[in-house]
Image (cartoon, rainbow, N blue to C red; front, top):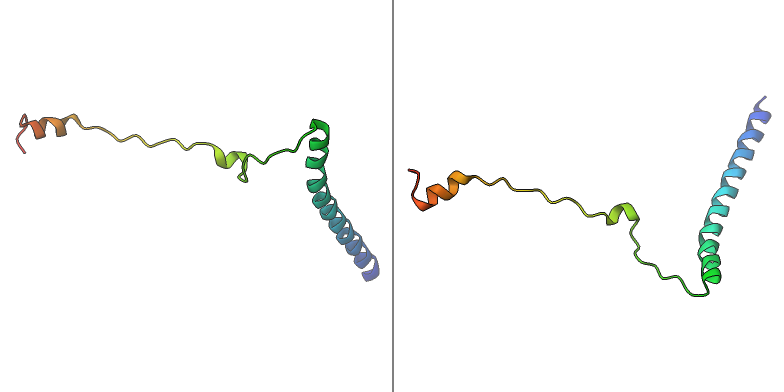
Length: 77
């Protein structure tokens, strides 16, 4: 029974290594195919992923009207 389990894990490990190799290979090949189809070199716009390029919302500061009145002498300190 141990040999069956061992051979199954070896098969899974081999498939995993193969999948990683294919992914790495396709990562290099796909842009080259796009360049050939477009007839020009593709330029990298950014090394950051799209989600990292989204602008963050600025926090709004609360304005306190009483502060302006106190500075103008309208309210006692």
